[in-house]
Image (tube, rainbow, N blue to C red; front, side):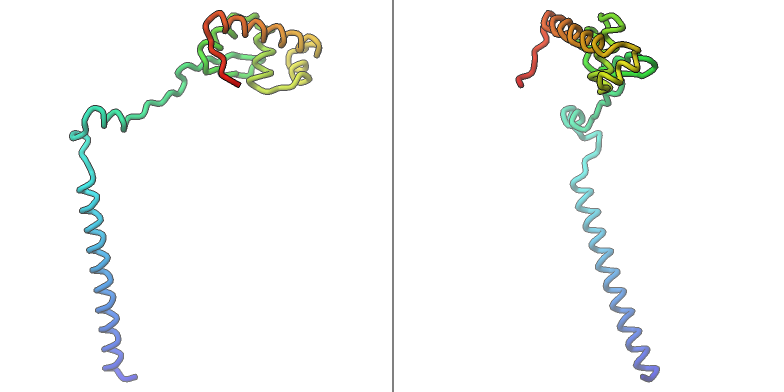
Length: 144
């Protein structure tokens, strides 16, 4: 292949590359134009549209933290937290360890230094007390 053929091929490749780049630049410009036409300034939004874009985080709102033997237990329902707060500490700890930290009876016995029978009895009586309190406060139980 002589020098003139090499130069011709280089020129053709150069022209091809320039064409590809120009076409891509046009495509990008069209995309930017399309996006600009679809975009709306925040100043142009109606109050209801602004409301749709807003997000309110609920971190730490309605969170009640109970301490059980140095373990924090978070309860997010106000009515349930009030009911638990009214219980004596021993009964409350059994419920929190059992249902919120998902400990079994043996683990609860070890944690609270109680007999297994005591843990079982406290849980049953406390659940009844909680049920009665929640019913009195108008709590509506979900359908099962």
